[in-house]
Length: 81
Image (tube, helix red, strand yellow):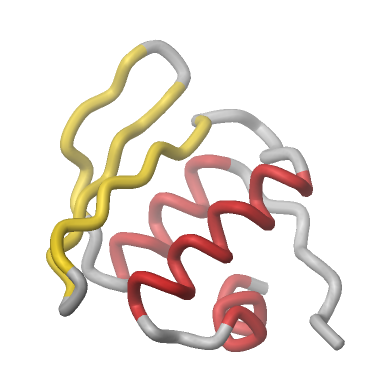
């Protein structure tokens, strides 16, 4: 069973993704686009720059990052807390 998702803001999530090797490409309004070259190719992901990211949105983002970086989702949730 997956651990409970933490409550995370856009700023903290972007900082976390930078540690994983992502770089900010651009920002449009309240959304920030990040990019990283992985073994599967170039991964682009958009992060809402909100005070608090909705649970479903965070879940989808972590699922995506897990697939592209070959890191188990549980591990990502643990590191994010």
